[in-house]
Structures are given as structure tokens and as C-alpha cells.
Amino acid sequence: MKIVCVGGGPAGLYFATLAKLRSNDHDITVVERNPAGVTYGWGVVFSDKLFYNLYSNDVESADEIRQSSVQCYPNRLYVQGKQVGFRDSYILSTGRRRLLDILAKRAIDLGVEICFEHEAKDSSEFADADLIVACDGMNSRLRHLHANHFQTNVDVGQNKYIWLGTHKVFDAFTLAFEETSAGWIWCHAYHFNDDTSTFIAECSPQTWKGLGFDQLGPDESIALLENIFGSYLDDNSLINQMSHPGKAAWLNFQRITN
Image 1 (cartoon, rainbow, N blue to C red):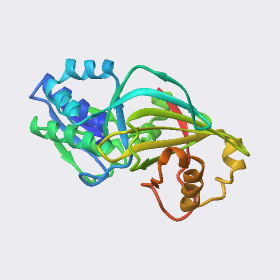
Image 2: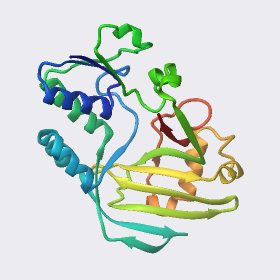
Image 3: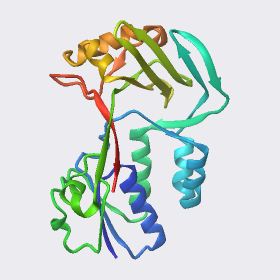
Image 4: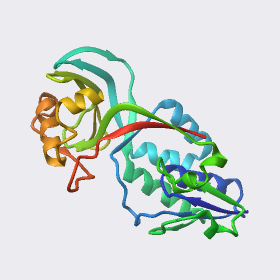
């Protein structure tokens, strides 16, 4: 079978690996719009249940991912700087780029071809494929083109969030709520390697607008967040991978069903 995976993220690469493991005769190509080694995002978390599934499917890549992960200890909950609770459990996390490197190498070693810097604009360019897998992310071009067929529904959440990083190492999965003049804003943070953590800030649209984030540029938004959450950052800065002129990269959570 000739298979084309449109999108070289974790879903496309892992699907390609499992399909190749099922039958080495499959001719599998992954097409990815970004260059090799380029990705956006910070840490990726894994539960014990997820690792059980990974090991059930492919021991080799599961071992590599686990060895490249760090442990985040009991979850800690803070309100206005005071710890009010914790959960006695832990998660494992690794960097998104490291995860993609592992999955790409595993797929290539099995004989999957990966075509980087290939922007797939329409499924018609893969007319000779027996199966096309649309794994090109939340804003999938292929899914948009065939939305009627897939009966796609996108449920957009009201809260605003921004996905950042920091060199403050949060060794526990941390959830912190801070009350401001415009309402509550909170963050959740966890480390994914020895010197970097994921840091996600979230708030209601009313608080987001009341604090002026709708008018602030990236640098001003980061500065305000550093001021609000300074007691947790220990003088470390927040890092914005998507920094560019204009507004900061605040987003809304989306749930997509087909």
C-alpha cells in the first residue's frame, strides 16, 4: 500500500512508524512544511497510561522517549502565592523538538521517506496514494478542504491563553492563580529538560481585555506577565517563540471533532 502522511508532527511520524511495523511492504512518505529540526512549542507531557500504550506499540521508540524525559513531581496548587494543595503523583515530560527528532529517526530507520519543506496544498498531488492521512495539525489545510465530507465541528473555548517558556525550572507540575484588578489569571508550568520549562498563562476574555492584552505587543505582554507571576519565576524571564511585530500570540483553545 502507498501511504502519504501530510504533516510531520508526532501524529504523522508515529502513524508512519506503526504502519511500517505492521507491514514493511508499505511505501510510506511523510511530507512536512517545516525544515528538518524546526518546530514550535515547548514541553510535551506523558502519563503512565500513555507510556503503556507506547510500549505496547513500539518498544524501541518508547524506550528512547522515556530516556529523554524528565520527571515532574507532585502537582502543586498556589493561590496568591500560597500553596493550598498538591496531588501525590508525577508526570514525565520531554521537549517537543526532542520528541520529533526521536520519532523522525525511528521512522527513517524503518524505511519511511520524510520530505521536509514540502507544503501540501491539495490532496490531488498525491493521486497515486492508496491512503492519505491528514495529520497537519489544528489548522489542517486538508481537513478544511474536505470539511463537508469529514463533517468537521470546531468548538472554540472562550478563555485566552499564551504558550511560553522560561529558564526557571519548575520541578513540580505547578498551577498558580493570581488575582488582578481585572480578575483572575493563572498559569501552569513544568520543566521538560534540565534548564527549561513550559509556561502557559490563561484567563477569561474579560480579564484579558481588562489587563490590556488586546492592545499590547509581544514585549509588553511578556513584561506584564513577568510582573504578575514574578514570585514564581525567581527573576527568570519568559520566552516567546512566536515573537514578531504586532500583537502577542494569545490563542483560544479549540476542540475539533469530525
